[in-house]
Image (cartoon, rainbow, N blue to C red; front, side):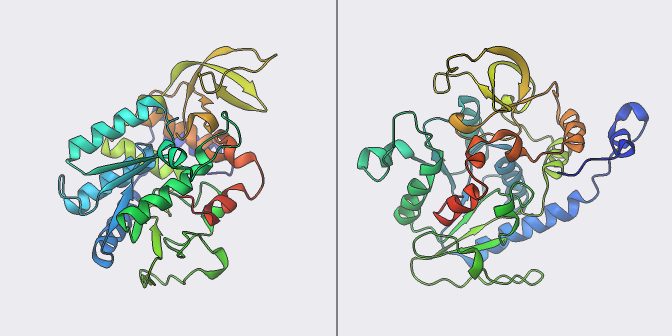
Length: 318
């Protein structure tokens, strides 16, 4: 997806050319995801599914619904709330959890701030990186031994080298040089006291696969994934949304543009891209032409250094 796509492939996906992009491979990806979700339910005593209300977790939830049936999920949904999330996303998260009859556990970074385990360097600091502390506190509170996440290998280079069953030590840290081998579908799920696993069932999916699956399964999403008019400022090549948390700086010009979000996270570090795509099919076409990954195009927290994601993951990040 990060490579440039030939014109013929773009035309093959464009209905106006009388062609259709094949999605036959989605059955294999779905089957693998369902297998992993069932494996987690069988292998662990207290798993949970990390659920933000974003597109990847909604795709994973759809697969879980197929694996176990609506209203029969064998593990709760867990969301770590920074207090700075887009309301469209948190509202849709709550709606989807109610619709499935699933148990939704929400733990807040603000609670960690109140108890003193999270301290901001200054009031305007992004809370995104501090989610790790609140997540580890939730793991300790509920004694979770496996957390299912929606990370994909095509998103970022640190995630590209992570296993599907990713071991975390007793401090919640990821050790990239001490990963367990994964042969075919054989997963080593042994744990010592205090350790846990992060499991990524859609690791082998790409952004294009996700959108093709959303289109095929008609999965509902928060409205900000599709084109809408929004005030933004152009800051170092990113379109920063103008909000109470991210006001324009001196000298910046506020513009109203047609944008959509490729990924959603904390408002303070998530940027939209310019787009007129109003349907999953439109986004499939756009994604075919994209030459920058979704995090590379939209996440300010990944641009602090070349190893910013790997450092956060070593500290316990998703």
